[in-house]
Amino acid sequence: MKLVKLIANLGYGSRKDVTQLFRAGRITDADGEVLYADDVVPYESIRVDDEPLDPPPGLTLMMNKPLGVTCSRKDPGRVVYDLLPPRYNVRSPALSSVGRLDRDTSGLLLFTDDGALLHRIISPKVQVTKVYEATLAQDLRGDEGELFASGSLLLESETEPLAPAVLEVLGPRHARLSVTEGRYHQVRRMFAATGNHVETLQRISIGALALGGLPLGEWRTLDAAEVAEIFAS
Image 1 (spheres, helix red, strand yellow):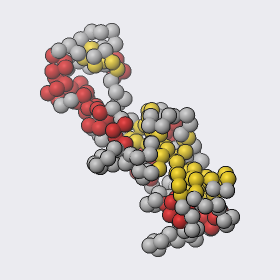
Image 2 (image 1 turned 180 degrees about the vertical axis):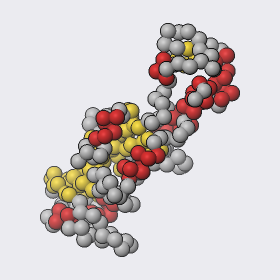
Image 3 (image 1 turned 180 degrees about the horizontal axis):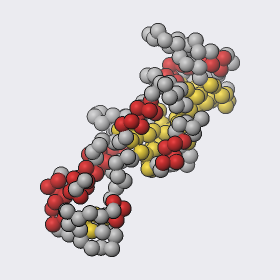
Image 4 (image 1 turned 45 degrees about the vertical axis):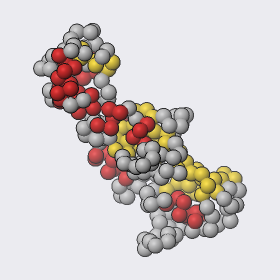
């Protein structure tokens, strides 16, 4: 791929804009030598204004999504894409969130520009486990774990029972829930089916990939080994 198209696809501007960057001598190699649009150089040696290029296509990243932001590109309020560098919003191929967390749920959110990877993660056939921690408005009754694990729980207005899920009680009103599906507001609706209400909800892991110590509202890129953790049990 020509350098102009490559750099434009990363969101540094239109092809015309990137051509102007070349003409201004702002695109160099790692040694500071000015590059030209028809040069052939390793990706990792390219610099724009002395800074390495953003990650190439095949980008996957994780975010610790805060409350109050929406997993959407268009919303009257704040959206998750506002937390990423502006260039990331105009990359080609586009960077998309892998599934959603609602405005009132925080925690681990993935993004990728790899369509095949995105579909593999969300595919019902793959059954990637998502783990949530919830605080509840009322004490647990005691039979929620058996109900959630039964594979017979039918959510309101649905005709297909939920797949078995694993509940770990952390306190009278504090629980950890592992699910392999991604139905609309699933965790909240599961507790609602028991007569309870979720007050706070955080996703802490996807597969074996954990949120860890990533600060709220921050993000980081994932390497190949970390992407593989998504599919580890």
